[in-house]
Length: 97
Image 1 (cartoon, rainbow, N blue to C red):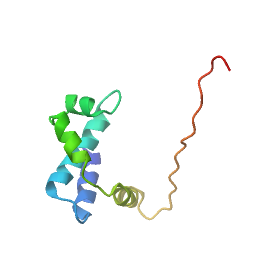
Image 2: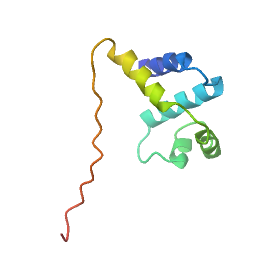
Image 3: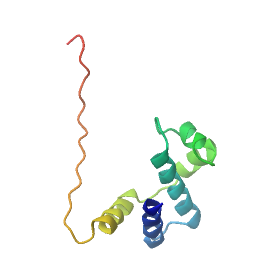
């Protein structure tokens, strides 16, 4: 899978990330990429070889997601200028009012 190769390359560049944590993050991203439904510890353990308790234990550790995302954008985007946007607005469902 080409997507996971990019993730492996970025994880190798990151400082302060142990080999165990690298493998865990790669497993989490691959599992989320291939599963259906809500992303919960129970569902993650259902769709991967890791136990629910393993997910809980690893999620207690810190990980530099901001640095990971910056490196990912650099790797995928190259020299082109890019903008990432996220719309977090809430639309109430239609109903009584």
